[in-house]
Image 1 (tube, rainbow, N blue to C red):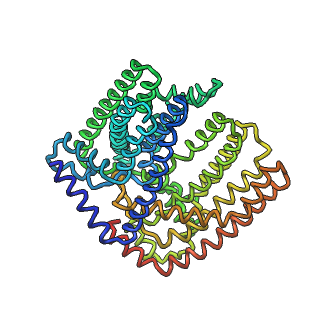
Image 2 (image 1 turned 60 degrees about the vertical axis):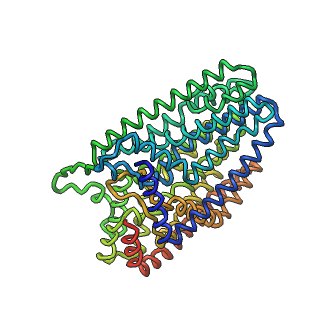
Image 3 (image 1 turned 135 degrees about the horizontal axis):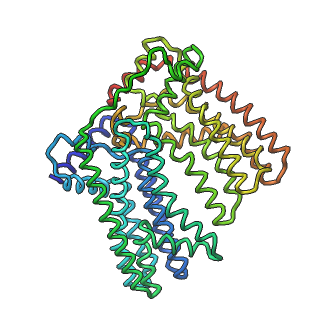
Amino acid sequence: MVATLLSLRFRVLANTLRRNTIQLLAVIFGALQALVVLSLVIAGLAALADYPQPVQQATVVIGGVALTLGWFLIPLIATGIEPTLDPLKLSPFPIPVGRLMTAMTLVGATWIPGIVTLLASVGTALAWRQTPGAAWAAVGCGAIATLLCIVGSRMTATVTANLVAGRRPLVRVAVLAVAAIVLLGPVALALVAGLASDEPFSVTAQVLGATPFGAIWSVPGQLVAGHPDRAVLALGLSLITLALMVVIWRSALLATFRYRGGGARVRAVAGGRLGVFGVVPATPAGAIAARSLIYWFRDARFARQLILVPLMPALLVLLAALVQASGLVDVAAPIVAGLLPLTLFAVISYDGTAFALHLASGVRGRDDRIGRALALLVFALPSVLVVAVVSLAVAGAERDLPAVLGISLGVLLSGLAVISVSSASIVVPVARAGGNPFTAAAGSGMTSIAGSYAVTGVTIALALPELGLGIASLASGSRPLGWAALVVGVGWGAASHVIGVRVGGRILDRTGPALLARMRRTGG
């Protein structure tokens, strides 16, 4: 049965890529990118053998923990879990849960991220090659670490999908809680311990090496340092962690089987109460803004994209304190401002065939673009302002506020300009409304990544005026340049947004029916 499920997965993948040239090119691009990254990692590990043991241990442990947490969070934030073996789809069939778990694990291990992770994890043996025993231990630990990554990713996705399966009001709280527990707990503890020491990297690695995420990566280094007892304890902790994750994953899958794809609850609304529709202007753009806001607050597929908004500034502030580089705090708000417009990359794809309502009602493309942008700005502007003010206040760099705000607001508005154009012509296969929000069609992740790179590049090009002034102000400490960056960022950003709305609106007017036809073909 496991072989049949694997065969089904790759048959669906092959058929999907055969039909969609763009996704095929995106997969090829992603594979080449992964190959480049893997080559750099292997080269770095080989060079690491010439460094002292504390440096080797700190590098391997911290890098390994980052890789593990990436497996836990990136599929939930960015592209989702490949859905061919989605438990909700397979729940009507009499498939033993153990065999399904085995198949899902093998799927993760035989696709590009899994293969790269396995090679990089086993490749840590290169850093310990001067001690053969530790090198062979690194090979075995690399295989276990890969299992921890894959099983942890599946466990997190399945548990969180169960929490949001009925589109309950606690969707956003559940997603943020999972992210905070998985990411901020052990990392924050290690960083705080590192900050209290004269050797922050070594102490941080020691603390991370005692956590469930870092224990497996610390085993070879403990052997080299002459601590076999600590190595055995770390290995035991890792195996216990893996077993616990398997138990939690199995329980979540059984709950999914019992759920069997039930729909959302129906909520009665008192007559005459329009909610957000009663607040916005009675215009087409206002109606679309209200509809988009309802999506943001009730649709788990939108809510999961906001995880990085609170996490990114927190991590940057902690990292700035750890490496004593206060300049890192200055980029927290601009990064958040650049990420928020990317949440609209596949906004029409999330509409699915409901986009037919726009076409049937004769909504102008310009109104569509304005409404969706206004909905995002309702919470994007306060978020950027709060991140900028709080992060700079924590770092004691309040004098940088005008420059940072100028860069951030310019990037936010320029990003909205670019996304207003790109999202009017791009269709990406996404999870269906009411289904598992953490799934992604085969190849769609690579398509999203390639498109995000393009959007980010054009956004940076558009924001060059305020970027130049803001960076000059931060480098020289000139407050007049900072205020100039703020004025230029708001003015030029607003102007570029107006242009982007008009261009994107015209594209949508011209290609709207074709977009709907493409969504039907991709199963939207």
